[in-house]
Image (cartoon, rainbow, N blue to C red; front, side, top):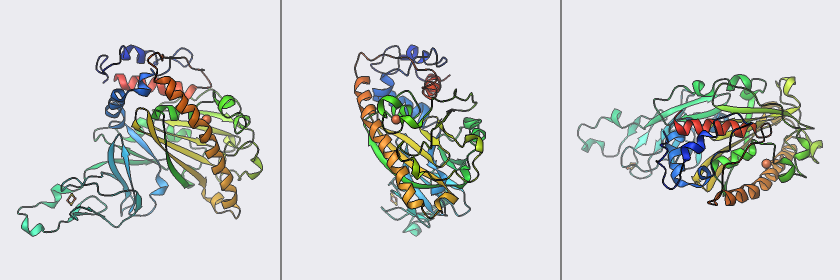
Length: 386
Ligand code: FES
Ligand SMILES: [Fe+2]
C-alpha cells in the first residue's frame, strides 16, 4: 500500500489520489507526479505489475506447442509459451543454474536450453538435462525446474500474474468476457504485431487511446469525422472500463479511405455492427473492437517518462481468407499508423508539461473521457490499497 509519506519528493500524494476516487463528473485527474516520478513507478511495479493479472496481447500468437515469446512484466523477464498439452504457461526467464536469461524474442522451440552452460528444460518447465550431472552428488532435478507464474486465456487474450496468491483471472475481470460476447473473439487472427517506444508515461498512452475529447484537435483530418460522440460508458463489475460509440463507416479506416472497408466479422452481433467498443483492461492493455477489425495496445514502462508500446491488429478468420484481404488490410495499417503518428507528438508534448513542478490535477470531460476517469479511480484505489 502507498504510504502517504513513502514516496520521496512527492507531498500529499495520498490526498491527491483520493481526489481521483469519485464519479467522472467530479473526480480529479491522476496526480501529475504519477506520470513523471520513477519513485512512483517503483510503487506501481510493486502494487500493480507484480500483483495484478497483466494482459499480454492475443493468445492466438501462441498457436502450436512450443510457440514462445520472451517479454517483461514490471521489469521481470518472463517466458510465455504453449506446452505440449495445449496449456499456456509462463515462467521466469531466468536459468535455475546461475541465473542466465534463457530465451530472447519469439519463436518455436521443442524445449528450452540455457545458452550459458546448457541446462535444458522441457516445455512443462521441468529440468531435463544438466551437463556433468554425474559429478554432482544428490542432485534432485525436481528441485530445479523453472519458476512458474499463473497464465490464463480469456476471450482469446493472454494474461499473466506474477503473484502466486492472486485470485483467478476471472475474479479480476468480472463481466469482461460477457460484455465482449457480441464480437467473435475466438476466431480473431492476430496479424501485424509491432513495438515502438514513446517519450510518455505508460498510463498516458492508454489514456489517449481511450478518450474522444482529443479527436477534433489531434486528428482533425484523419479519423475525427468517423467517430460520433460515444454512448455513456458501461457500468461494469471487474477491473476494466469500456465505452461503445457509433461510427460513420468503419473506425478501422481513415475517413477518406472508407471504400476499402472489409466486411463485418463473421459471427458479429448486428447490434454492434455500426461502431467501436473501446475497452481498457486495467492496468496496461487496451483495445478497440470494431465491426471488421480489433486492434490492441499493451503499454509497458521503461521509466516514468518513456514507454514501450506493442500494437497488434486482429481480423476475423473468414475475412483473412478473402481474396482481396492483403490489399485491403494495408489501408487498415495505414490508418492505425496515421492515428499513432498524430498521437505521439501530443503525448510527448503532454509529458513535457506534466514534468513541470507546477503541474496540478485537472478535471475530466465526463463522457468523452469516461474510461480515463474510470482508470484514475481504479488506479488511486489500487495504489492506496483500498
Ligand atoms: S546459467 Fe544457465 S546453465 Fe548456467
Ligand atoms: Fe488519438
